[in-house]
Structures are given as structure tokens and as C-alpha cells.
Image (cartoon, rainbow, N blue to C red; front, side, top):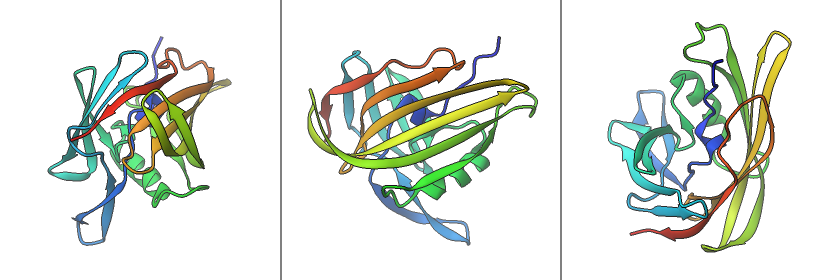
Length: 195
């Protein structure tokens, strides 16, 4: 049985305040979302997420570790599966605002191009939350990936609360999981430190 990899936003890794970057080729400047290098989040599940900053050669790629495992994320939101398609989808979200919505198909690697994941990401609302790490003004972002293989449909829905000031993911909650297998459990930050 093939286990599908979910986008990192679904895994609730991170998001951050936009930082203007150098132009990416002649067409236009891009915006990247990457927390300050050295920011560390500890969750109620004892996970540790450490932000390492923007990749020096790609302003849309942010680096971090999750429990000491390195990860490069497009726009600091999705693991890289099909970079061109993912970049086009995620660029639709910015600048972040309530109602911003991005969607599109992402080919699934290792599936011979036969399957694509439809991913819909939307900024639902602004919300003040109080969690063990403190009180924060947040963006609430919903990710809804789905895959259709004949009559079989797999889909999931997850909410992530991102600090509006720093962009750090503070809480994640799965609302629905049909056929996606293991999805990270719900969590919230108990400690956030930054340089």
C-alpha cells in the first residue's frame, strides 16, 4: 500500500511574516515566508521545531528542523514534491488576508504521473488564541488535500494557527481524515523562543 505524503502546511510546520526578496529572474520579485533563524517551538507533544532561515539560493525555500530532522519547505508551508506546480499554487495565497485561497493539482512523485493531489489552502479568519505558550493574534489556515484514484477518494482537512507577527505555527487540529493514513496528532505550542 502506498502512503501518501501530505503537504507540510497540513503537517503544520510553519508560516511567517513576508520578507521581500531579490527578483527571481526577470519576471518579478517574490515574497518568502520564513521565521527568524534561531526561533524554536516546543509543543505539548514534546516536538521541537527549530527555524534555520531562508535558503541562500532560493528565496521561496525556508529551512527548519523538526525533532532534529532537516526539512526544506516551499514558502515555509509545503515539502517539495512537485516544485513548479506547488509554487504556482502557493503564490495565489499572498499577501495573506482572510478569504485568500490557493488551489491546484500537484503530481504525486513515485506514482508514475498517474495520480495528482488536489490541494486547497485557504486563510479562514483572524483569531486571538491563548495557549500554554501565551496569547497570540493568528491567521487560521485550512488545508484540504484530496486524491482520487478511480472511485476511491482520499481527503483530509486540517487547521493551523499561525502567529501574525512572527509566522510561527502555534496550533494544529485535524478535522477530518478519510484514507490518508497516519496524520500527525493535534498539537499546540507550550514554548516559543526567538533570538
